Image (tube, rainbow, N blue to C red; front, side, top):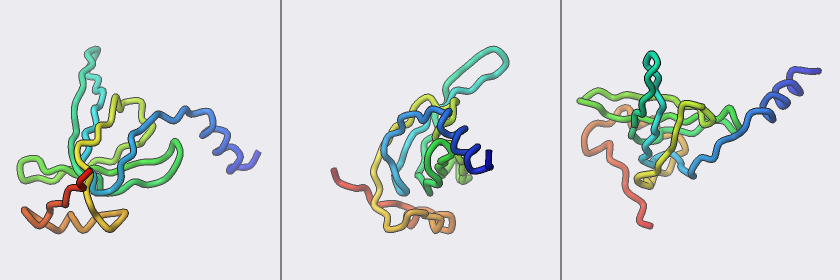
Length: 117
């Protein structure tokens, strides 16, 4: 069995979770299951989607949020067992699939237009 066949076999065994449709520029909330000792709790991470990368069970997405004048970026696998739910808060209007230019912008220049539905 070649490497490519092995990878496709393993990916077919992993179940792909249902994820809402979102793209770069959207503001989303990811609810995570966090385990501390023998206690389990939920934590929300709300921010702007910078990119979606890959396809299938190995796909990932990057979220950026500003927390007390410090920017925090986090990469999530789409099929992670620690993600409880993903909620789309706002749809953004951007012309790029990867909006890394937001890293260099501050204040009002870092705003993204909201898409009217």
